[in-house]
Image (tube, rainbow, N blue to C red; front, side, top):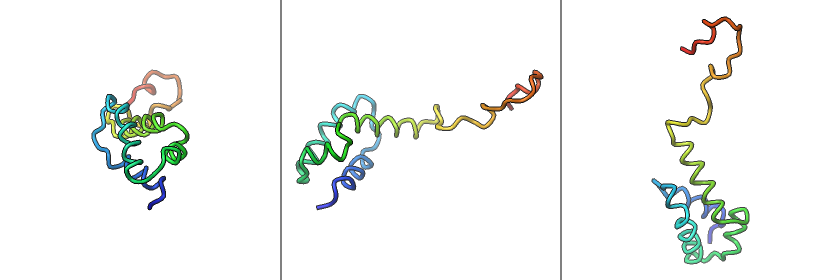
Length: 93
């Protein structure tokens, strides 16, 4: 049997196109899959930092943010430009 941490990472990464509405059912499916693979709920809880549902939410939200073209993880370099207070220096190309 594989280490549950590796199994959990693989299981989450295999889930594609998850919508925010799927988060609640995803936790239940994760528990069912873990049991069917021979892992105890206690081991699953330990591998998910004590709270399976919160772990699932963090992974899904993190993935949604990282795959978003609307909300980049890093702002453009010009966003933090602090220069002279002359108006033409405030224009962002």
